[in-house]
Image 1 (tube, protein in one colour):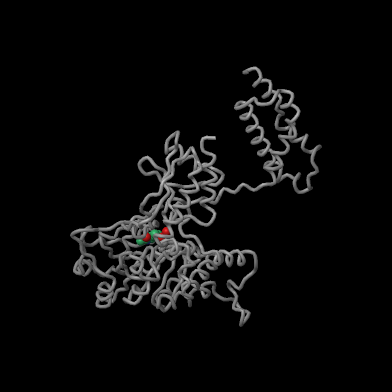
Image 2 (tube, rainbow, N blue to C red):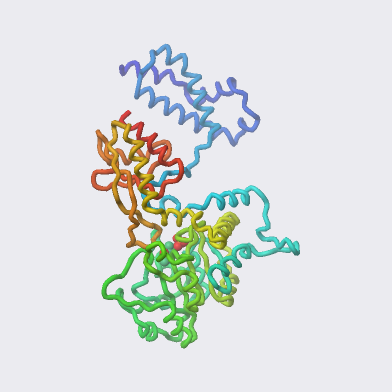
Length: 471
Ligand SMILES: *Cc1c(COP(=O)(O)O)cnc(C)c1O
């Protein structure tokens, strides 16, 4: 056996042999044989030879004669397939975790009609910075500013790369070399190393902490105001809750204090939402509109959290402040591209037209329990024929994700599966490493498929993949 393996390994051609034989064998276009292609071709040859070596080590199914006879055609076909197919690093995954704003999976999904609009904008020229009426240069922000103002009630709006950039820009514009007062209960860290103290520092501002972790009062802010104070900052404690014996100063109360002392008050709303989640059973939090109405100078929030749009940092508020942001050189470095603006305009228009159920984030968050029950039952039923898997319907909870409503569990229905042989760790990995990665959740001795975050066709692919388990 060992001898046979060595014999076959020796029969494999060297890289340069494959390359020269390819030239005789295949008619390449002039483009493909040029210098730019040689490195890629060489890499592909190496990969194909490597996988051929592994195959030989794994199995000696055919006779040596068969192996030798088909060796070249098999290498060549694999090579051509590799050369002509595009294997992207970014791949679609099936999110069966039930976490709606899954940061590792790209946070918010765009509505299909918004995605179509983005694709159209990507393939065609546009009036991105053109005023069609006058034929002169225009601003890229006008396409969303009016919409944002209408939806939030603000005087002015602008958009940057993400909410972290929005806060950085705000600090750099209004507090460079000066002090910013923040409650100790609001010194947030969000995933991906965004920390309020550090962002302030990066923007050139000095942080002045006031109050205690659980309680901060108006008088704490008042006592901290000095000649170097640039502004008062409120930060949404997105991904954690201070509960029990607590007190925080509301945005409106801070605005009152700011007015008395002639200081602007700004708020990082984190996720921020256009409508009150209370109608869906979420804890009541001020909407963006309410935050604006309370008189804050500027309010910032993310585009791809509860808004359900593209990654972006949205800043709304009083015109004088927005204009100063625009004049900052950093704005150019943090500016959004046309695809982001297209995705944002598309999403904002859905809000304006009241088509909120078309926004995937809200559709998933508000999915009725009986719809989820039906989808999970169907999945369980479809798996009944699979002898190697035991599937049952279970109640569970999904999460919002993205640091929004961290303590809220959304009641859901899941398809809980257990392998007849093998363990759940292996089964979770098997799902993740399939042709399309399927992300699930392990709970106790089950792999859970939460149907809340599945899209059309996903269930079928999950059933297909599970059909391969143990084969
Ligand atoms: C999420 C979040 C951020 C960062 O927003 P990105 O859009 O991810 O940059 C900043 N502040 C708060 C309070 C957040 O919740």
